[in-house]
Image (cartoon, rainbow, N blue to C red; front, side, top):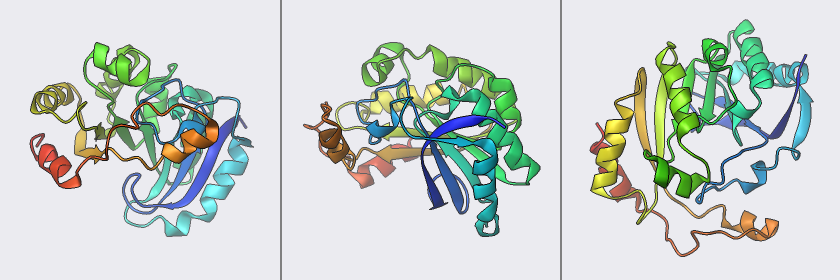
Amino acid sequence: MINGRIHSFESMGLVDGPGIRNVVFMQGCPLRCLFCHNPDTWDFNSGTEISSKDLINKIIKFKPYFRNNGGVTFSGGEPLMQPEFLLEMLKLCKENNIHTAIDTSGYGIGNYDEILKYTDLVLLDIKHVNNEDFKTITGVTIDKLKEFIEAINFSNTKVWIRHVVVPGITDSDSHIKELKNFIKTIKNIEKIELLPYHTLGVEKYQILKKDYKLKHIKPMDKVLCKSLEKKLQ
């Protein structure tokens, strides 16, 4: 039994992988993405401590609802920053025949090969595709993401690519072309989604008394976002 820290638990997630899913939002993230809408997940010492036993028992109660290849998605925060707890939970899910997914930016502290053995699907959130812009957006370098992609390419784990389109930052044709070339380096991709930037998390920054650096940017047009997505096919 291993203890971990989670931020929250969603019982009926519909946009975090296939089917109906439990979503475990794990606490702690080393990235400081300019467009992050969950700044309350950053602090590694916050959230709720829970044992792997208690969490799997909670998940099993919802198993009858996991239709259409539903299951559990470990999100965050950044789930790869709690590798021991994440691996234990993935193993317990597989022991109970539950489909597993990880929603990640690819920034972790190792043990990727073992983690991916028990992961059916990776929802890989690509923040940017070159080191300079990646660091501007996240505060960290792109190196960890590239390490994780290397591990994915040695695994059989399926991948869904996600990328947030921010007006004036990641919405140009040249960027989309660069993104397309970057995505070509990743194996086992089933799906590519461009997510329109939104401002739904701004109030959290006000509550936490943090500065929201993109307050001058309006939400991304959803129709335009879909048209850019077609260019990646």
